[in-house]
Length: 292
Image 1 (cartoon, rainbow, N blue to C red):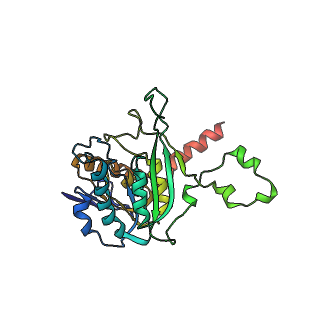
Image 2 (image 1 turned 120 degrees about the vertical axis):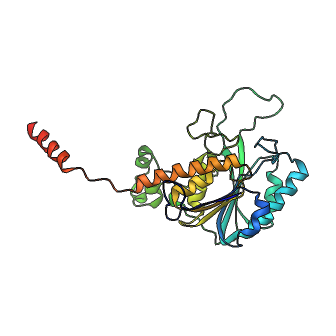
């Protein structure tokens, strides 16, 4: 099954935000994606930990899992433009091997630690509790695209005041905010979270939006080889990026399509100009003010 979403969603098409949803295995379909056509890859593949995605896609472990990962990375990397980059979510059990492999093919920019803000509730007594995911950030070359401004974190008023010495006046970093560090403390999506859908390892939109805004130019294309519930697609729809995503579970494709439709509808509402108030309403308001 191959579903292409350009115009068919009831909310209409947003310029630069078309989504190509492919209900198939990326490894089988990679040949249909032109080389050097992708600005950014955001990959959240199975971790090799036996999660249930409605199929056996996460049943590999050890060397078999690593060999499978190397195969899809070998297919994905050539799809990047010379200015392109890649983010890959992974677990600490396999991140050393994956990062060594990727460093043979790409330039490593960052290792990002996602602190999932897991509450302290007992757990193992034979080691320290694992509460993070690893994210590798790699680029094709030193000329990779990166725009810090959309993802700067604003200073609060008190902090800005403390840095208001004359030497800092007019500083861009003070006005727009500071560079996010390489530890991203963002809560996981608990079962009651408003953003949560029916997917066992759904990533927070806040994290993926940061990747898309910083590492894909407006109007550029993002590839997600393991789309899941479509969080990367939603980020692209919200911010005017094109999207290609692969997902072997048809139920997850349906969830992604629904989320894209909602994101497009929300953006349309934001972009529509405010309607002028009716003449009758303005007259009424004026009469009320005169009476007061």
